[in-house]
Image 1: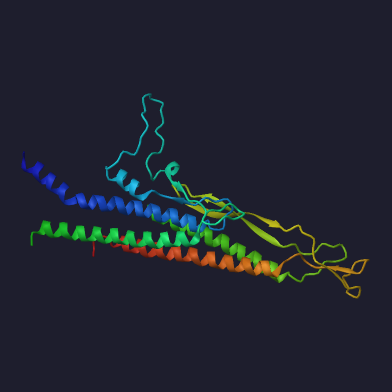
Image 2: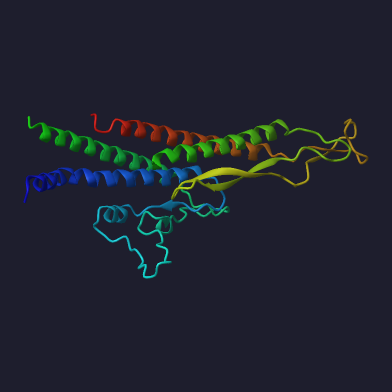
Length: 142
Length: 135
């Protein structure tokens, strides 16, 4: 094994944790957008609130689970959007209280989810910052 | 970048809610409008919200699709001395229900505030994201 290979593996090891947190950050921002859409449509008749299966989406994004792709055996086959973050696989929220306009947004639940997601987004950011700091220190060797 | 869509989503909701507030204001202003002898008084207006897709997965904004007019007959008051009274001595007022409009106003202003808060949170998160790796 040459020196180049060794250093490549070491860099991979260094940035493994960073990769995980990056995926988490991207998913958090997608969920944030989803919840913002629910809050925006709190008064729209017939709107069905959506939610993401976050743990499943994170497992798929970091390679822990298959996204459930369909087999494309012919050249003309179209690969549908797969995984828990894809539009057809987003979950539908059930209404906490029935109402006449068939809207299923529960504003209390959405605001709680929004606050929860913001804190966790910021946590992922801090983890990334700490990882970057660690990597830079390791490179400097001081 | 998916977080930037939040400004479009929440922004569309804010503008839809402010349009609703405008309609409430004109309804309340015309609550005591009197019709002429033809019986056509001011009709209460209501905005109709509709989901507007924003292109990316899960990004759904709001738009006002139509402004509909309430077709219920106006309030009729017997007052033969009124200059706008019809042949039977009745004056037709607008069909605005002030209590309904006040409830509508409170709901619109709460939704407006919620969306502004969403935008503020998204802004502060994005600003922190811009400083990634510097801290």
